[in-house]
Length: 329
Image (cartoon, rainbow, N blue to C red; front, side, top):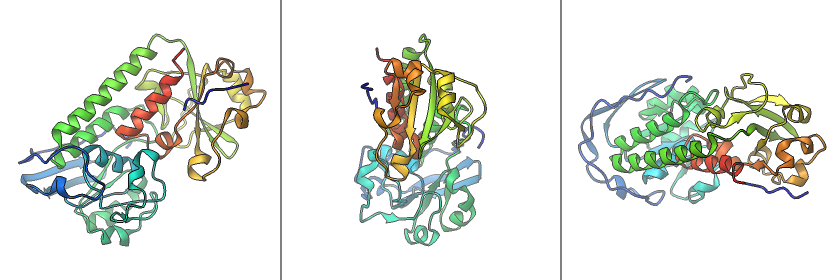
């Protein structure tokens, strides 16, 4: 059989108390160029950003930014803001130009930043997510640190709005308001188009993560809940809370749920550099009994967009593209 491969816990609360004195130039820059931020570094008054871990006050426009999560690197890339330091262990394909860039300091692992290297980057702003939240106190002693309040355990709670709000907040910080608004509008249009296509469709979907031969399923209350709540995809199977790591399931579970669509996230390929899954390597008699398999609606999702990131503008665009592959007759 030939199968097409088609390839906190609260919503973000960000308060910008004052407006910026001047706008910087907009558009993409090279990963290390400082030209975009050179002009008018001082604000008319301090900017205060409230997030789950505290309130971060910025007295002037940051010139050297360390981003400790790939989502944050993508936000900066979207706004043309240079990156002074970032982890280099797992860089998604859509940020290829940042891989081993000699002028960008490698800050260690995404889940365990090297604080000495972060300090050596001489940042005046550090961006983190919940993966680095345990280091917030130490990082804040190095430079002002902002936590991205995205909820990876239950993303149904305004996930897409959180992404747009964070984008707009960073736009204000860096004098890129107009560009940030355009990027947010692009996301709005993409989401609206996806909801229009999906809303009247009866198909039910299952999201499964494949890891070394084992499966985990993700429902509406999970890291991929936004696929159901934000995009309107209908869920197949029980709606148990599945959180960050999903609920372990078997091929029998998938066969009994009998989804019309199966989205497969290949964790082993991206985290362990193993050969990517294919129809042949995934094939088994139980999966062949599902509507998804019979109707050629097993979608091998972009694992770097879904697993490494999933909470940034570029990754959300790629995830929506993957989701819509199942609805094209």
